[in-house]
Amino acid sequence: MKATIYHNPKCSTSRQVLDMLRESGADVTVIDYLKTPPSKAELQRLYAQAGLTPHEGLRMKEAAVGALADASDDAVLDAMAAHPILIERPLVETEKGVRLARPRERVYEIL
Image (cartoon, rainbow, N blue to C red; front, side, top):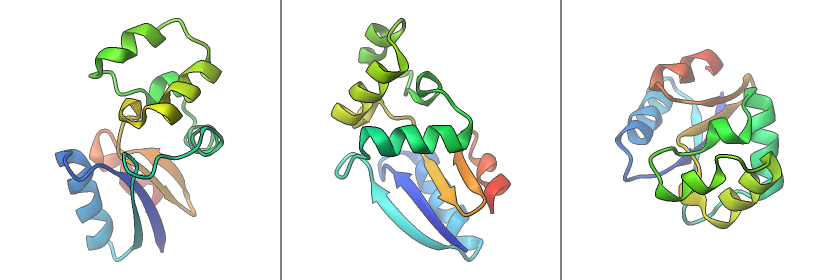
């Protein structure tokens, strides 16, 4: 099985999910989304496949999130594309779907 993880190597949850993917035998593509951020269109596609709104994909621990509380989905996606630190991680995609792996066990739903 192939899997893509939008990963932040400094995040313990993201590292744990990456280990879980590798332990499952998945052929993993790792995208350090802070260095190679997904486009607005890619984020929109990922969230749609995950059944999430862009607001649900925001990293709530970031200070800039407060300014997006009443923003449109389009504005949230623009902000995430411009400032990928706003993207909650890890996002994982397999042929079975996309999951925001928080809690990390959610990744098993698509393995």
